[in-house]
Amino acid sequence: MNRKELVSNIHSKKNFLCIGLDTDIQKIPTHLLSSDDPVFEFNKAIIDATSDLCVAYKPNIAFYESLGPKGWVSLEKTMDYIPKNIFTIADAKRGDIGNTSKMYAKTFFEYFDFDAVTVAPYMGIDSVTPFLEFDDKWVILLGLTSNVGSHDFQQTVGTMVKTI
Image (cartoon, rainbow, N blue to C red; front, side, top):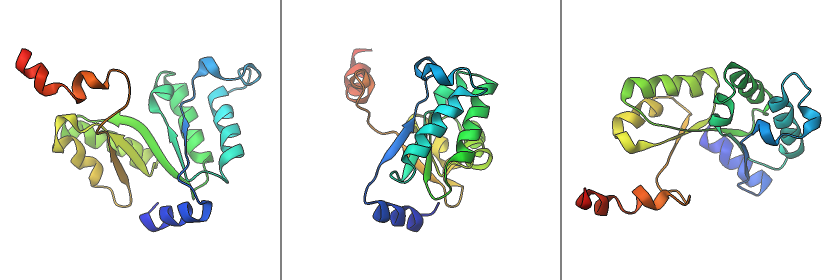
């Protein structure tokens, strides 16, 4: 999805609503657990109920990876089900040396066809550059987080270096 399409969708829906699909198999309603693919069925229900309202879906990749091959199938089915006019973000927080980042980028941009992926730039520009080589794809850099432990590294690195 290009910038113009995303902005148009934001204007027509009058919001920036992004729905996280952090589908935890332990929290799925019990009536869905007997289906062939409970993760996909849960996601499908969420998408059916919200696709007219939101401008983006953001599957958290860890919830799919943790299920092994079945999780990747659930993610693929979810991506195929999301309407094409809705922005998709792979919440993967990837960031590694160049050739590894290139493979991550291929996974999310070519295989799964996400519009964007979250990237942790800790290892430097060569960990980000491979993601930037895809036309009409977006990179969301992880810069500052709000979790409890974020203070450990994000705001005290200078102090830590001095004490080490």
